[in-house]
Length: 359
Image 1: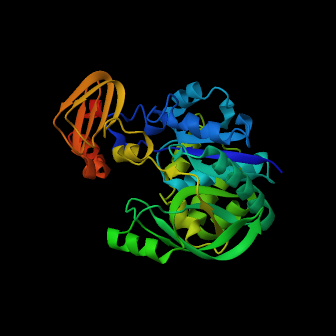
Image 2 (image 1 turned 135 degrees about the vertical axis):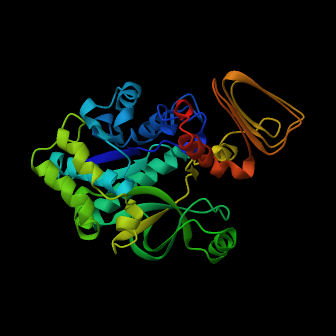
Image 3 (image 1 turned 180 degrees about the vertical axis):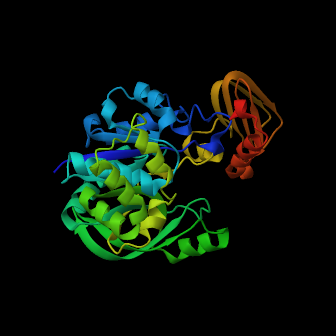
């Protein structure tokens, strides 16, 4: 039985504009280190899963960039989606592909743009999750032990034990909750047994195929039928785009995880962040004089608690507080730090005004 990693790299990261663009999505950016986020993700699983068993699912427009950035991964392991359809179709594509390559496989599904602080601990728990998913026929997810009442994450309630593997408890995931208001997030924290939804999963390929057939047949059936008829998940196959365009856009959480009775949660204590917006850098990178300053040239004078990113340009700040300032060669973002989650509104306005050269 072989383990595989499926890395979901389809998002564009609109909340990281103006660094993130249609031609340069967030997962290709070097936000946290000298390596792009997707390379960090591949490297994290390498001790457990070799590059030959890593699949990348991304937008077709990014295929060439992804392949150039990850030459160690075989060309045939990249699947280019013709358009975004959320995570259920993404998982279904990968599961059908692995099902025909290696029916007895176990797959972990990881977003391409997360940060893990304690990589060794993550690898140990991932190894346990792979073993538990294979032995107990479970859909396993990592629930992050919350450190504060975060309102930007979904939550999972899990208390009852389902099984134990290598001394690690697999809890029954009983309820999934959307991103809560602060008062509710505080209540979750006080109650205990509530975990941040990491969006990382581990399961046997055969099991997720069965669960997809049961809960989202309108997603899995067209993909499976297309593959059975000899279709290829590639833009060169004229039927792929038309088939994929007809699929509903459904998340794997809503489509399967919230409905299945086989979902189990492992408590994650490895320092996780989904790097969702500019203010996430404050939780990950070390502060310099109270500021987070990234890029080739930043100068901050009499300024506090700011996040400043200069992409090939000098950014000088004087007497500012609690701001996000990002400058690229053709665009500048200035926002209150507490509005960092709303940067996508800028992208939506640019699209509305058809200012495509800035997208």
